[in-house]
Image 1: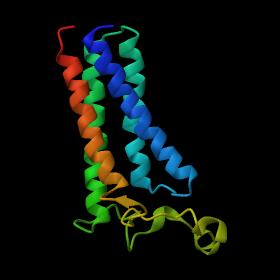
Image 2: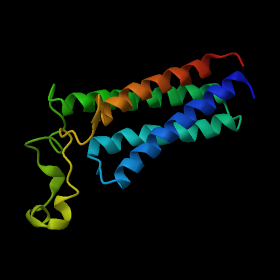
Image 3: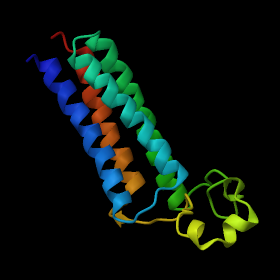
Length: 154
């Protein structure tokens, strides 16, 4: 296995771990807000690109695209962390005072929906950083790995 392949495998496993961790938190009762869900898509894309690169299909290009994808989720994570800390406003559909994304009056009164509505500016878990903040930091580190893999000669 080449050095590039090891870097790609490590970065791919990093996204698998972060995405898997998000789903484990969800299984433990931490419902995701819309911005949390947005952060998952670039990881999924990075995983697919990692598999493609490890299969030998344009590994440098796949690694570069995965690096861009991880920069996107890192940016969303940092932005979301700022929304949670009330440093700047978040999307009006999922932040305090928003419209709640088109939920009807019946939906808002239903006890089934009330437990699943999570606002983007609420902190539901924090260990030093919020989940969004950790995603920002760890995804940035993975983006560096991806770009290193993309620029390696072998």
